[in-house]
Image: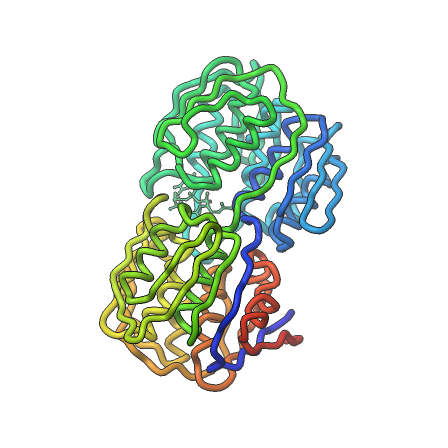
Length: 421
Ligand code: UD1
């Protein structure tokens, strides 16, 4: 196990580059199972979640090659039985279900394990597949899916009590590409990662309309073919670096290779807090405000403020003037970072699905524990401003989704070192 030792107080400056999106890569890698032809996918970030996904594809029988961010997958003969030991490590492996039932008419996938960010059911995924004609049996921790009479298009409302489901939309879209007839998804997720998947599937020959809106129509086709595709920039990594600049850059800092339209809610929040963000093509130049103040954020489906950015924004509010509030309507339990930030001197109170932050606080380095992916990034951000050394344990959480985060931040002036725990 590794830990990260961050020495706070250095000023960030220069340019930091954003990698390809982890959350777009995962369903797109799963979608390569929809064809027996070769797919070439560029800018797949080298993080453990994409590694797990490639291991699953490989165990299922696909030929997989990876070099310099490019992944080549050829899934000629594929098994329907996903490997439990890898699948249990990553919730996103749930998106193997859609492509496997579409291609083979059957899939055995382990139920995802518990998750520290709260209850994460897959009822909507299963209901959607049932409405396409799948028969589902959940036994011994496995989801056993069979399609006795072929998948048939249907009109399906996917909206759950916490709003649209991102991977549920991805799963259903993938399953419907090879179903018989028209599938209409109402209450679809409109996240950029869903649009990237729809673009990928469209290049494979799928007929999809409306991705990026709440209603997606998929006209099933006989077969799909191989493609080349470049993954969109990671909007959450980009947002994390924008916040890093607002926390710790004393001069202008640039976040490069972004898609600005994917970051509107985050950029608007930074501006509301008194920071300047100037967009120039694929770059965002951030100048920290002289007297940064806090604000209120409330997470919601895209284009609202992303739940995957609320913890990082909390780190910024801690060092900003005034009372800020952070409400998470999508994952109401997602506040594992709060006690760790309190250990560093933050004044935060949790009330149900809301954290109330009183700023500004002087942060002090402390030993802290990473609990999940975005919470760990938050601890790194807070550590950049803390006095002295912060030791972040359980670093594997951050390596699930941030490509070389320590090297990237050191490239703009942060001081940190990775060590064995
Ligand atoms: C994806 C992202 C994750 C992000 C989340 C919300 C990936 C790999 N992960 O996760 O980083 O935080 O979107 O933007 O892309 N729900 C149900 N039943 C279901 C499915 C979901 O009730 O069958 C609930 C969830 O518990 C949650 C809400 O719906 O409250 C949204 O979750 P969902 O969009 O499905 O999250 P993921 O797709 O798993």
